[in-house]
Amino acid sequence: MTNVEAPKIVPLRSDVHGKLKVRELGTFEHVKNAHMLPVTAHEFARLSAEYPIVFVKNSDTGQFQSVALMGLKVGENLFVDGDKWNGVFVPGAVRNHPFVLAPAGENKDRLMVGLIENSPVVGEAEGNALFTESGEESEYLKAKKEALVGYLESDQMTKAFITILAEKDLLTTQNVAINAGEEKINLSGIYMVDEKKLGELSEEDFADFRKRGFLAPLYAQLGSLHQFSRLAKMQASA
Image 1: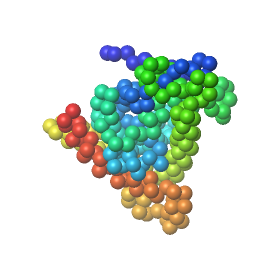
Image 2: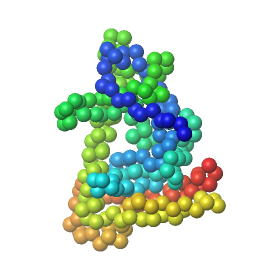
Image 3: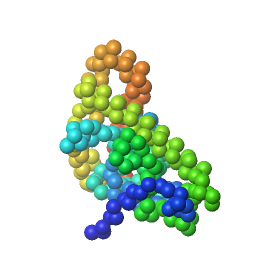
Image 4: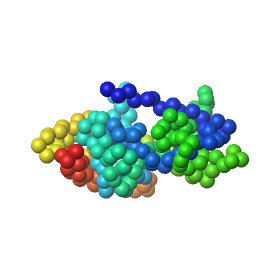
């Protein structure tokens, strides 16, 4: 079995990383074994055209998280083909790599931009420079930082969205049986929006969902379930 090197996250500094460059989406090595990826509600509409969107529950905390399924088996991402992505829309969690927002020291309310220093897309030979020769942030880095902040805001809205779904008891666990060619695959431990209970929402709750912008991602999640058949075809030909 190949040992996967743990991500080495370090604070991004011009005096240390002044010569580094990033090959934007140069490889998808870091997610080739990810059969599901975290996604935000703002992405649901575009994701739903390609990937099934479901929810998973943390057994320790009891909290739910929205994910897009990339494969039907643990350890297999059907959308990664060498250095290519076999899809149109690449989830933000993948696009942000190798940058992360991490707590700055002991102050968990203050965030810093971190760099996954040992990522295969990071080096000095080719790619987008992180800093100028004078040590200033490059336009590329500024754009990536803005994207990270935007993703964080989307993530916070997504948590609020999922919290409401859970509070209204709109998430139901499902076992999904899929025929991938000659192979039968059973998926368990995933949650979806319960359409019956959704239809029984009070007018007041429904109006609140609409006011908070929750209806679009809600229906996008339901619509995305048709993509299970796409994954089945990809799995059958894998």
